[in-house]
Length: 341
Ligand code: NAD
Ligand code: LMR
Image 1 (tube, rainbow, N blue to C red):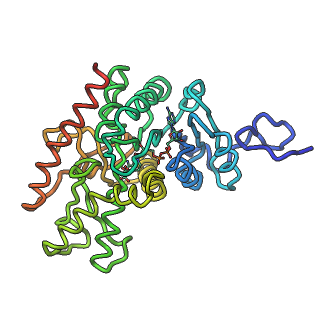
Image 2 (image 1 turned 90 degrees about the vertical axis):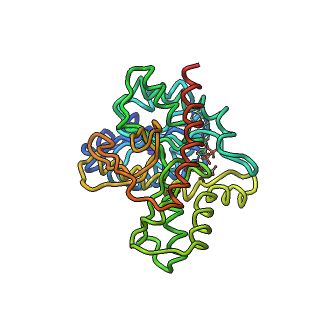
Image 3 (image 1 turned 60 degrees about the vertical axis):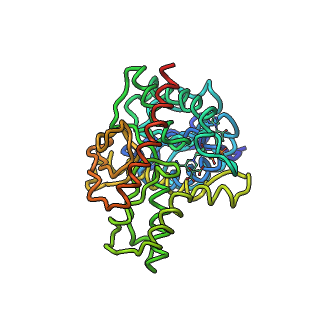
């Protein structure tokens, strides 16, 4: 009569020996919640976080389907214990005690839409989830994936300010997919392995606000004007390329889950105290006159430990920066106004 039991419920099953034990190393591992865990990004992200040895406890929260996703993921013989939480009444339990909260909840684009067209639905979703974070785990690092990131990060900041819990070092907009794409497309042009290429991408996460710094590619290289134009356009339109290819079935999910898992891992390694962890992210910033901006940040035990300077920009990048700032300023203001209205 030992029926298979989802490990999310194991503590309630007295017949299973050691059911109160944590996996080896769990005492030192991190507690991570994914909000929107049943979605196109959420599911593969849950899989990747279950595979991360730094994670001891993985909470999967969504308004639909978390029992199935949790049962499925919990059968993986990796260290993290998985628990599922379904619907608003379970949000607080999902968040209590978390070290890192990753938010991919919200609707994705369809062809013909901009990310800003998602604002009306996703702004309210992010507000509700961040109110939960403020109440239940105000010291957690928060990774915001939900679009439009240029506005949802300012929304999260305003929610935390209102609750009196805001720590700008803990709030990070996830722009890693822009870097992942830039590394891939630049490597293709240069004929290199994409793992050996590093392209800083600054600004924000929509259209012209995605500003790859092709003058700062590592390994050092140069591009002709045709290559610069092709690469800049392709990197800025990477999301739209996927939205159009999926033809109404959503936007990037698999590459995004990869990017989000990579970024979350960097945040956890920073929390652990590893040195030299640098990633691009959209954060509260003073590198420009705007209150939020994506650039390289150094991660550590307290979240963001340092925001690195932009470094020298060429004339093309300086012109791009002006366009970026104009659009970003409006998106930030829209997010702030949503909470203060
Ligand atoms: P999806 O529709 O497949 O999944 C979204 C999930 O969110 C669903 O399971 C849904 O039930 C859940 N959800 C909705 N309201 C919720 C709430 N109030 N609380 C908790 N969960 C809720 O969408 P997706 O493809 O996974 O994309 C999710 C978001 O991520 C979109 O806004 C998309 O634009 C964005 N995105 C961002 C990036 C980035 O680079 N930052 C990349 C890709 C997608
Ligand atoms: C992306 O860059 O893939 C995401 O922001 C999703 C989208 O709408 O393009």
